[in-house]
Length: 142
Image (tube, rainbow, N blue to C red; front, side):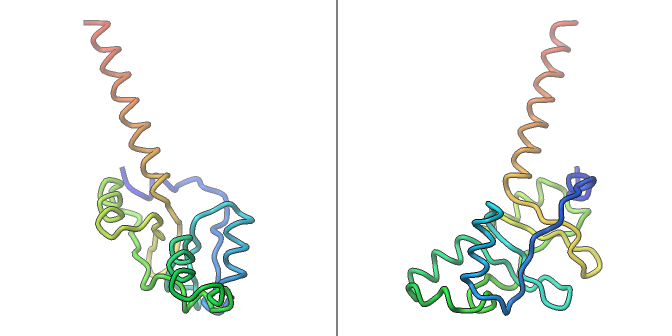
């Protein structure tokens, strides 16, 4: 199954921020929305990801002063992205290899979705449970 199938039908807007926003503002948005990362946008293009990990790393290196840095100074860039036709297992492998937990879905230079490792793992678990149920049903009728 592809990422496109996974995100089709999603109706919620993707919460983003700009590179010029302060880290303090972006952190407040993460907390308010109870999310772990924000795509960072500039002129309609994803230029990076601002995540909880970025906050932790910068707090360790810069201390509380990092709260006044811009998101552009703190974010992880460039963003690791996937195309809608990417297979879910490929996306999981990419996340593991690049050690990221969020992927913007980009088509024609435009972000059309945003997936987390939780989204992909949930799909895998649902698929495995479905296959196991099908196998149980098959064994019972054999």
